[in-house]
Amino acid sequence: MSRVKVEKFETLSPKIETIDSSSGFVGYSFFRLLFPDSNFMKQLRLPRSFSDHVQIDKPNKQIAELINRKAKSWKVNLNKDPEGFFCFTGEGWKKLASAHHLKLGYFLTFDYNGGMLFSFRIYGLNTTEIQNYPSQEQKKWKQEDEEKADIFKAVIHSSNLSKPYMNIPKTCKKLTELSKDGGKGNVVLMDEKGRKWPVRLGHKTERGSVERFFIASGWLEFVHGNGLRRGDRCVFKLVCLRFESFIKVRIIRCGV
Image (tube, rainbow, N blue to C red):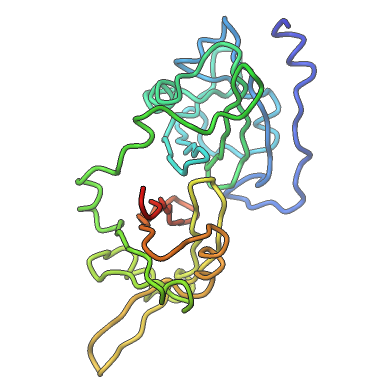
């Protein structure tokens, strides 16, 4: 199928009525088919109607974040090419393309979540979604990430399966700050499938001076939705974007 013909059949979601002036149209979606002449390992051209759906404050100076179904994210440049099309480009896009071993004929879908954050999925030549990414996608977060005080690991105990909370270590400074900060304690947990689970971060003082921080309301919904069991291990990592924060959760099953 030629590029021109595919462009004619491209499906775009309708405009969403609720508009955030800083986020554009949350819920806008589109797909891209990788053509032989599209140079997709270096950039990905977006639909012409992209700028009609998503507000761009600074063309050619915008950074977008792309997140896959494993909750792994890449920051890429969002620039206009000489023909006026917006493109995902830069070193971030090259790393994403390499990490997913993009190939001619692959089919990518994108959903806009606001704040220049896009979720994406990849479909292979057999038209089924690719869920098992290359080994580099499976690697544990590096030790230096743990030193940023926005990540912690926890073993699931019986109490975590029945009581509506998960304790947060005091060493996670960013998370403890959010726990203290009123309404900003509302975040979402994002599992490895890209599903979101709204939760609230809380804290309280015990015995007059000992502070305890925890993930509160919404925790049990996450537990049940992901089928957590005693002995499973979870890695929690806080991701702070311009317009929202969320916690990526990697689950390591007991016995694996």
